[in-house]
Amino acid sequence: MIKQASGGTGESYTLLGKVRGAERLFLSGRRNREADLESAVKFFLEFLRGFESLDFDGPSVTVFGSARFEEGHRYYELARELGRGLAKSGYNVITGGGPGIMEAANRGAKEAGGLSLGCNIQLPMEQEPNPYLDHFIEFEHFFIRKVMLVKYSSAFVVMPGGFGTLDEAFEVITLIQTEKLGAFPIVSMGREFWGKLADFIDGTLITEGTISSEDTRLIQPAETVDDAIMLIRQGIGAS
Image (tube, rainbow, N blue to C red; front, side):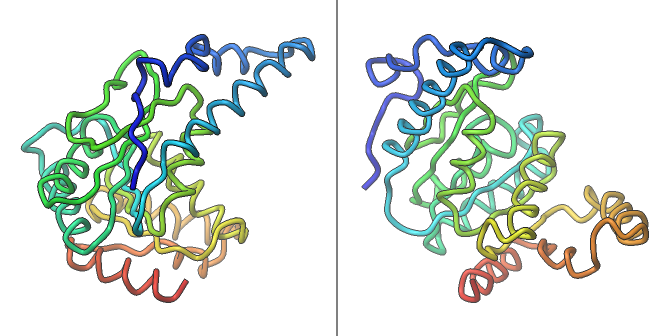
């Protein structure tokens, strides 16, 4: 069972109550050793809270995607359908915990009776956890949040999104490419959205030799939710 904890307020957050803005401070430039050691302690505490909080049964799928698509948008509704399909197939659904695609996937999972989880990030904008989470944990540091989104999942779905989605997707691909992560399935959805990026990968990265053609097989496109779930099942079985 998942351990219930506060998502950003209350006693469970007191150890990290003074870290707001800590990532910006840590990345502000060279500091003295004592300041960096203090940051390292904060990293440890945030990791520890993540490990203690994300304790649940069953396989999980992380869904990446933009916070900016609202209810009614075709990608929002696709992510909602995906969340329902994953839950009905026995998967927990993990997202970044925010609005947009994240909300939609969590919403679909909750509507289907599945476990809906969020790893939220403290930001000036787009930071509020969506209302369809059974449990969420709030992070200050992007890199710790990304570790949690990867560590607890057996598969990943990349929905349309912006810089953050690209960052998350390419990090997972790189981890698998370099064998730092097992060969878990990565599925992309929204062929129309990702079409020009695919052209760039094929026409520039492969042509210039910065990646090999085999690397493109690390992420598989899916047109429908059924296709995505089939690829996930096949990939988990093969990993």
